[in-house]
Length: 314
Image (cartoon, rainbow, N blue to C red; front, side, top):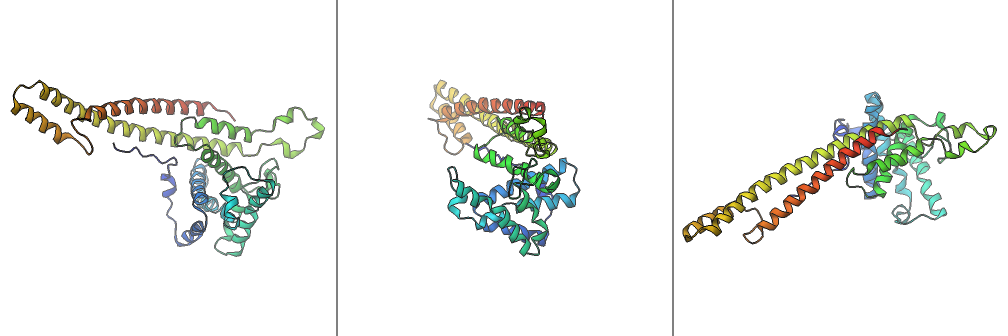
């Protein structure tokens, strides 16, 4: 059976930017990262590029932000692999080490004249608007806009990866979690007004950027729907072919003359594809029919997911 293919991130927009030799040098730094971090960096850059487009950023800024996003985790090349790739929860000591990737990446970029313009990506991408981020605990007014965009894309991809998403079904649950980070903390309602500081009047991430991410996710969900529909079309073609074989099989069994039996049997064999035989084609047909039902259900759930996302409020 033909294998359905789907890339969770639709990178069409990203590929539209022709990267020159200077940019290629900057992005070549990713080769020093482990495969997991490199893939994450590519995903975040993809998202940042497309979020910038929905934010109507200038092309020059979009390219700048995209490269900053590619390099945002470059400091992890200096972190022990056993900590970067640890599957379980980090100890407090390990967490402090992993946090240093922001300053390590920044220092690396500052020392390299070709990377220096993009040092904001590594340094600021874990800062939070309410001052609870790191490494410097900056607040909204001091966090570069490019870093605010990277923060949203970084957090989204981290959740997607952790939950091992392979489809956008139920992706609204991830977006709901991000909405929580875009809103002020609940304790605002209980702390006396005179105890509040400016830091606590914001959530961790920029709501405007999150809204742009929603649009990107909707685009990707439509892209997945198109992939599913394309696969359904393929399945239907296979069902049509196998149903023709089935008709030949019925005629073969109903024929009284050996000559006719041979005729229909040869017709069946001509239509068989790799691995199909007279003994198993009906099972294959049944599997294709089941696959169509399942993909139709996936398509419906994806359309439902888009409806949910469009109703989400930040």
